[in-house]
Length: 175
Image (cartoon, rainbow, N blue to C red; front, side, top):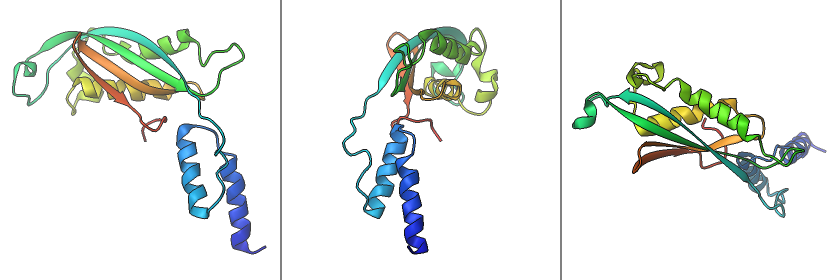
């Protein structure tokens, strides 16, 4: 067996042993197509469980360089919805305990409660828009998720009729 054939054989073993996250399936499919391999996951259906929890906080902010009323200091009673996802259930038949993901979300939003958001380190240079709040909360919560679970999306309402959602379309953490 030539060195190239041996490397391809080893690569095939590594590709077929990858964890089964949505990102890995896409990467694996790309590698398999480049080398003309029969897809390892061709007959495997993809199933995903989602759990949704909510939290809330009250805070003030102002939008810098905004031409309108929101440039003035004002506040909101924000509602935050977080959707987490994963493929496998544990021995109890749960993706993850709701108590655990509620605690993660509450920890992620606690720093915003009853503060002037513009003074927080994450918003020293970027505007504290609803969109940016959703992304910052998503990134913070996703870092805390147990193995096999990721934050699919975070939706932040600044009022009952205005909300922004930050989501990761490939099923994994933003890079």
